Length: 82
Image (cartoon, rainbow, N blue to C red; front, side):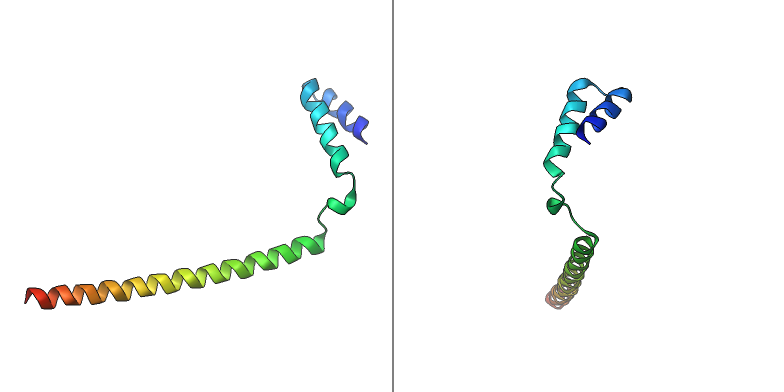
């Protein structure tokens, strides 16, 4: 598989050093136990969606809190200036 990849890259006009490095990198991941499965990707996707939802809620909380604080500050300034 590595030799075929190297030859295909060379035939496509890739420089020798780059083709050799790409072929060697395939050797490192030929062990399929290091590759992600569809189930792994789906689990990662669901984890990422959950984390994004939590971050969205935090952002909403901070935004609302900031708006309330700004309103209170504005009201205090208006009272002070009267």
